[in-house]
Image (cartoon, rainbow, N blue to C red):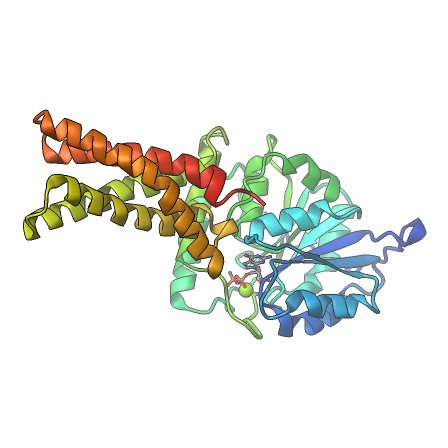
Length: 379
Ligand SMILES: Nc1nc2c(ncn2[C@@H]2O[C@H](COP(=O)(O)OP(=O)(O)O)[C@@H](O)[C@H]2O)c(=O)[nH]1
Ligand SMILES: [Mg+2]
């Protein structure tokens, strides 16, 4: 590995009843201008193959789903899954792949960055047997990662690959690739163990398999984005670290727990920082100072949990304010306990930092329970 199998496009007739042999899963968010050219490219690349494309759109404001449905109106090979109130590339891929009835599923980005002409080679290699998974690699000999938009993204990609390789039971030159194909039956088998958070579904799949997968790497170019914007950001990097951590723990501890713990720890830090600041700059009672620090930590925790812990169900617009209000009201009960307990400890000559810290800890535990059940309840 990497193996560079150069084969001609296979001719895979449609199954009886017109069932596709290959489902191409396209996770998409705000990719409207790329839909028509993408389907045209698939049509050209997969001539002779019974294929379908399944767009999984997270209710893009630019109307990507409507655009896909417009084409689906006259092309039965085109399907659309529209998810409302959800976000996430990996979970979109999982839902798309699980909606397929084809023998094989491929995953490809919807922004034309991946070279769809590699699909027939991937399919024929898998059909020939000997491999469980075909991965389009930007870093295998003959591949090309020039389409990464910046030097920063190249460095991030290199760092991620290095880290991922340390975890992988098989050596992949491009474990961060978002372009791959596998038998649907294998995907279904692995689905239960998938973490489903973040961007890195290939890594998730490979790390979820109990036996090392036999992987074929197919070199591929990575083109520059044709239209629209990348959704990759710093939080995706945080989720990547979370994914590795989750896999390291054998999936025993849910990823949200790590995120909660991290946000909670930062919340305590914010709480104490605010408490220290108001103590230096005001002559308020300790009780009032502790209450101010609690409110600051509460607002901070809400926003960070909304951005990281519940990124996939992130509240926005009016829902954000409703969520913050609900969080604040219900956490108010926790805050009363927080301030009360801290006050009792303080009156018993416990140091202000310890009294404040214990009070805040109680508030944070309360916040965990609330966020899981009431504020970001799964829809
Ligand atoms: N359904 C869904 N698709 C997403 C989401 N984030 C990114 N995508 C899609 O995943 C693919 C890769 O994302 P992109 O932003 O291009 O990542 P980059 O190529 O690493 O910069 C594109 O087709 C995006 O539209 C998401 O939250 N939900
Ligand atoms: Mg892209």
